[in-house]
Image (cartoon, rainbow, N blue to C red; front, side, top):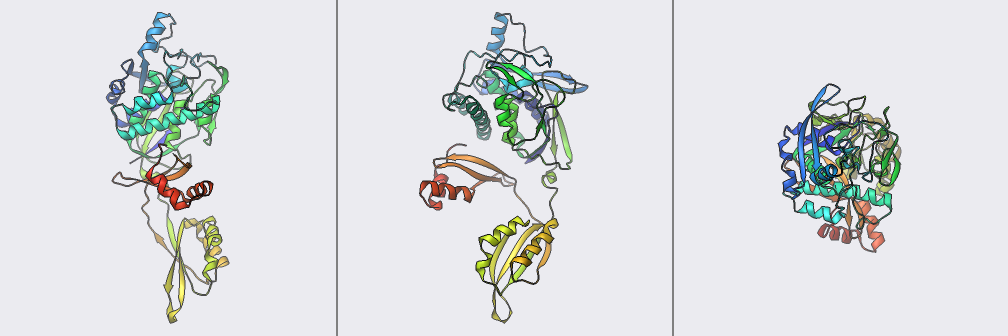
Length: 431
């Protein structure tokens, strides 16, 4: 399992991710055969040398051979091989097809074939890639599709994917899914994201930067415009980042390998994303924990119910348990055991003293081994459910639905929580 740190000081795009991930793996060649594995012979991947403000790196360019031929036939004179300026009026005649923003800014993305989400899903399902890479690709496409569907106010199933249905866009996104799978990423940290600013010309008219679909995908993430006009983050870049579920905490970290993913355009600042593999200790700098205990033998257990427990967690407890014990003189009691961060000792102990009859607590240092975990929403026949997904050291994945969501759906469907839980475990829908 790997932890990565993304520095998005010049935005993000699919091509920038492709380049940086390939460098982290030390393998660009695995992408060359991807068009063939996707049964898309009209696609091609080229690896080019790049230099961004003195940073020497490699650029992964994804080409749509049909589009290139059409460009030549119509004498558009804007082939993929030339650099584009970063001025505010670069052409986006492809209907904000920002799927690989920096690599394709300035040329028409008027694909001859526009696919529905179902068409793209079939291409992924028939690809010769790992099952996990397929799942990642499905998730990223679905994120973009939902954003586009919301912006255009159209059902997801009926919307034509002008923006992400081209050969190059499909290869771009699936390529990133393959690399994410190979990197085996369990945790992602990220800096605030530079979006650029200004207005961009699209098939739908003049739109603000970031484009509406991109802005939708960036909801809940820290962003800033930077000091240069232009589009610096694309829907594909935003969707890949959202899939990685980044933590924007300002933490210390120890890089073990660093890669640069260049964008096509040249800005005044270096147009690259920097991604580092970091030591797993970064995840919480191995948070020191205590276990606090109190034996309570002179208080009714009803005062240790849900209200007490909610307050205990609010005071800073990470977890707790209450067990029955037998004390001296044959007295029955309850043993309250609480796990808490070191810096919450005073707050938690004060809460216990104020809320129970105990007159003393004991505590000691403990070590914990925690599995990497992410929270995701999955779609079920009852509605969306938040699940916790953990991965064991031997790569087994465990998924547990959150009880609050199960309880909510049970009430809405007039079923018991156990009935809902049993049915979504038996027949979950693809997220």
